[in-house]
Every structure is written in C-alpha cells, then in structure tokens.
Length: 97
Image (cartoon, rainbow, N blue to C red; front, side, top):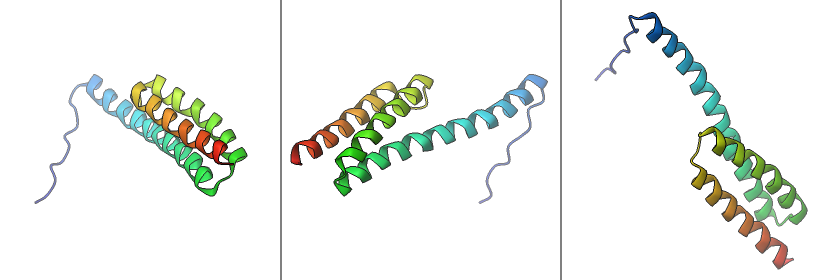
C-alpha cells in the first residue's frame, strides 16, 4: 500500500510553517545525535577503564545534556537520569582503581 502523499498548505502562513518545521527538525535531529554521542563516549571510556578520559568526557557530556534539556529536545528528567547513571559509572570506575 502506497504512503499518503503530503498536501502542500494553501495559506502562506501554513507554507512558511512547513518550511520552518523542516529547519527545526534538522536542528533537533542534530542536537539529539550530539546528546547520544556524548553519552556513548563516556560509556565507552568507562568500559575501557580509562578513569581520566571518562572524567573529562563526563564533564563535557554534562554540559551537552543540560543544554539539550533546556532546549526541550529531551525532557529534563531524562537528562538528569542519564547524568546520574553516567556519574555512578564514572565514580564506580574511580573507586575500582
């Protein structure tokens, strides 16, 4: 079954809104990717057992997570939860060493 074709808005304001949505979607997608990459980098450093790298990456990741939560890309509680979990992993790595 073919997908439904999107109709172009008739009103100028609707056409403008559609153009803006394309730009916003691209920006949000990029930021979402940046968030996930920051989290993965920290987790990778923790798995590798590199305490110094994990600590610095975690500090950078905190900034990224807060910024993206403030913009509303991800919910503030999700960012807080992710920061908490990353912090626990980094602290566990520091204690194990």
